[in-house]
Length: 213
Image (cartoon, rainbow, N blue to C red; front, side, top):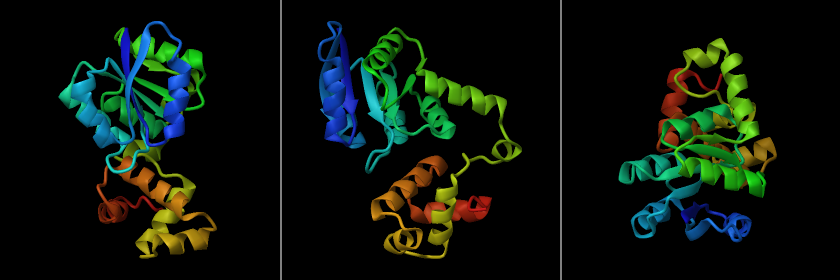
């Protein structure tokens, strides 16, 4: 029996994953966690074989959570579960110990195949993710090769520019006609991409490497 731990901050996602896996005779969803910190706490008590780990977690993000989990239990197999299709985030998860990457819109067969393959010691990328990685390798730009950080999206650069101008999250939301939560999500993604621990660190890195240009 493959023991699975699901770590995601959305209860609906967790319940959906449990439904996908509940009837499989060789997979048992042993426990769930709503944050990276809670997932790490349950690591020793649950002792899972495979962890389905969201990237965009509150507090300790999925990349740092993955890294810490591997440090604590080097043999645990981690599959990133995310809506993010950016090659930079995929590579960050894989470089920090994840053995698989599956998009949240994946079907039952893909999720089961991912769990089975990583449990057997293989690496699993679903078809969409694999195509993204291949395209990135074959079409790598000079800019991405020269920068030590992943490239930012147009919207992320817009938000970063306003952060550098010392606008608050609410002011940024109003200026760009987007929600407060959307601004915070983009900010969190930029922290993940740059490895910055807070907004002050993000500002320092942005100015030093001109990430907002």
